[in-house]
Amino acid sequence: MDEPIPVTRDVDHGTAKLMPDVDRRRAWLLTVDGAPQSYVDLDAPTHLEFEYARRLGHVLDTVAEPGRALDVLHLGGGALTLPRYVAATRPGSRQDVVEADRGLLSLVNEHLPLPDDAGITLHGADARGWLEAAAPDSADIVIADVFGGSRVPAHLTSTAYARAAERVLRSDGVYLANLADAAPFAFLRSQLATFATVFEELALIAEPGVLRGRRFGNAVLVASHRPLDTAALARRTASDAFPARVEHGPALGRFTGTATPVHDENAVPSPEPPAGAFGIG
Image 1 (tube, helix red, strand yellow):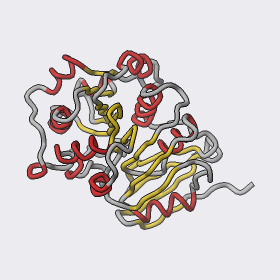
Image 2 (cartoon, rainbow, N blue to C red):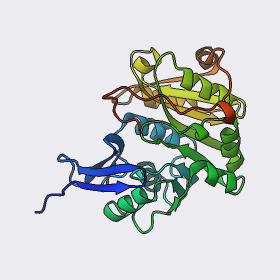
Image 3 (cartoon, rainbow, N blue to C red):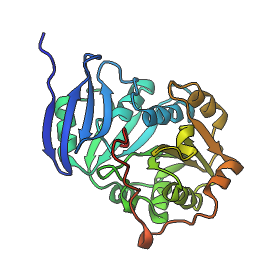
Image 4 (cartoon, helix red, strand yellow):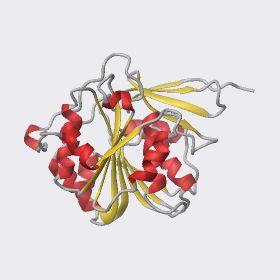
């Protein structure tokens, strides 16, 4: 039997590489300029390898009754790990994926094709530009997993961006974002302050060592107008193979501290990860 071989291609924003996993027959790791971006198993779309992806999956599992179809907007495509997960766990969902790197979309679509009945539509466009032009009240979930290299772009961190995301969500919709930071958490705190200007309910999911400032790592921001099922989230994340903590309410307010909202005129990208940080995007 022919063994899968790595695929390397120059895409719009760097050099992408698809590397087969020797332990899983049809599983692949996507990197861009050496930074891990996505992991996908074509035979097991519910398998989420990266810690942050599993945490996004935990939120997706608890935002609505199991199996209910949802309208989901994904900002950032990668190898389409989360769209595949939603298609498998919530059949009939309508999903749009917005990815600025058209070359990356082409590579993934060619080598890791989606099932014909997945209900997933791909769009080559800037995330914020798409949000600002999208129909209001058109999504149940917006998931932002956008990294320029290994940093969240500045124009996706401001109050204007948060308002654009809120406009697209239905009244009971939920916004999720994969972010990355380290102590003293200036970026993460500013994002909490920014989204608090738009949404009443916020939660943050991260590995305890990250929250204690021991290392650089990912944190999942969850925002909505309706109360979040933080108890269910806490149970799921605590029992994960890589346990995480859910911060919300007064504890999250203390974590945010005196951070102020970010506006377009003073927005900056998320911090550069240290050498060797894994699974940022």
